[in-house]
Image (cartoon, rainbow, N blue to C red):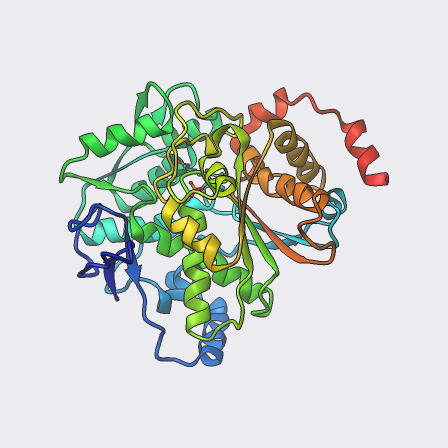
Length: 405
Ligand code: F0G
């Protein structure tokens, strides 16, 4: 296993634990090159299941349970039993979207209530291994909360750069509760990310999703989902897209599992953005292959209020390799879909609801079959943004009308 430049034209290789932010040769993003494990797929699938009967922290973790595909060499793991999230039926949501077979992979049911924990256990473990004392990130809120928690567990200082006035209070409260130092940056997430990249010197270990160790943990969401489906890939996996690290991680997981013979076909990856923060969706529609950043992205789904996503190239490759799709949804569609998921007793934060909104759109346009087997990835818990719920003007009666029809 080693680090490699993600740009296929460069593909420069580096030692696994070299401390790098970007490729020193060409400046592009790095990735972890993972070779197929020596153990046969059926045997490894059995071993992974067996680990669920163990109380060892590395087995209890729904991330490290899949360690044959993860960076190695660690004597200490920073873990809180992350992963192990439910794949739950969304019957009312399916009916609302016009589908028959919809499940939610709820990554909001993690220690800090968001999928970021899957990548923080690997990212902070690597930070400890490389003897970092201070870890930092720019964030729309969730990465900050998760970073703060895992840093606290590891005894590291955490510094988080947040777009002033555009982070949900619940997420800010988590970061403060877990003891992070908060830097409020004027402008949006993009400005915060530029600022930390400028200010980060050797003493700060950088933990945004351009850190390839984070994506390794995040990719296990696909391992766990496939295990829960008896290793029968669904037709579609739908995921919200902000900085596009998670879509990239999912594409990487699926490619590795196919190459190693764990699955025999790929689900189509559908990436969904909010209309006001949709640079990838715009590029996709235009047929261009160069991303045009959006200067002032705007959406009430503040988690994905991002105009210049850094991992767009990796995410585009993931979508193309899986014959997937990219689309965007309006603010009203997000609010309505979120209310439907809430009224199923599941709940999620606004960014996560883009998935269901997109499915309804795809059904209305006849682009997806009613019987398709679909997994929508819910990235954050309903309690991540309570003011959105309280401010929402969509009333219950309209929603009930939809379900009875
Ligand atoms: N959903 C939620 C709830 C998020 O917090 C994020 C990203 C995404 C989806 C999009 O994931 O960036 O990998 O495409 N939140 C980051 C943060 C940006 O700082 O918490 P992505």
